[in-house]
Every structure is written in C-alpha cells, then in structure tokens.
Image (spheres, rainbow, N blue to C red):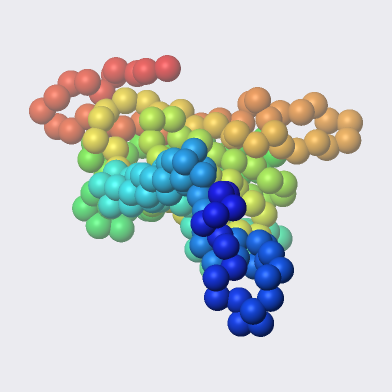
Length: 202
Ligand code: CUA
C-alpha cells in the first residue's frame, strides 16, 4: 500500500497523472490473516475429501442410491418385487430385503439373518414420505413413494437391531398419528457353535 512502490514508471502516454487503481491490479495483495484463513479453508477441504474417500473405501459408508423408480400404486401387482416384501437368500450368506414403508408400519417388521450375513435393502414407501434407520449399521435413508432406495449392510455381531421411521409421517384426517409406532426388528442369529442367540439388546 506504500505510495513509492507503485510509481507510474511505464505509463505509455508519459502522463504524470497518478493511476493508482490500474497499478494496484498488477499484483494480488493478500493480507497475512487472509492468507492464513485461505490455507485453513483449503486444508479443511482436502481433509473432508480424504475423510469421504476413506469412509467410502474402508468403511463401506455410501450415500443411499435411488436404484429405481416405481409407481407406488402398483406395489402389489404380480411381478412387482414389492408384491411379497421380505427377505430372500441370493447365495450363501447373501440376502436381499424388499421392504415397504407405509402408515404406520414396515413390511416386513421382523427379519432374521445368520451371523455374517450381507444384506442389501431395497425400500420404498406406499403412501407418504417415511424413513428408515437401522440402529448400529450404516442403513439410514429416506423411503419415498415412487423411488426405491438401497443400501447394503453386513451383520457380524449377533443380537437384535431395531429399525425405526425417522421421518415424521402421515397425517390422515381423523386418525391418530402413528409415526412413533413405526418400527421393526432385525435379529442376527449367532453362528453355530456359539450360544448367544438369546442375547437381546435394546
Ligand atoms: Cu413413517 Cu414416520
């Protein structure tokens, strides 16, 4: 900002007029603390991107994907994967669960899998917007009419995992609100050789 350092030395017109604004643009001046905060902001961005990358590659944390669209009026039609909601075994240890969220329950609301099971959840809503959070796992996504949301989880520890609707849902005129009653339970059965099947956690 000193006057001496910005004297108009190469003014093509030879004019002695002061042209400070034009000269100032020639060099980018960054204040000390501005520079520090720019470095901090860039550093935090790098850390966040690294954290997301590590989470995705090492911990299997992913953003719920909308794998498909589906007409909520046709969920019961023959041929619809949601016509018979529930669990299916695809291969030893690999399962898929088709689940319908509706006012005010999940179908199915009881699921059993063996220890170590890898389960892919496909969830849609029949009527209004719901959500599902499966405690102790990375399954936490919206259940939307017209959309199929999907996430995968692996169950290494035996026990009971509750799932709840986490979207305040469904006002039907004259009817009691049942959002708080909308939950289910997934039970992971201990592998043979252990006897922890009866161990249930809240
Ligand atoms: Cu369904 Cu809240």
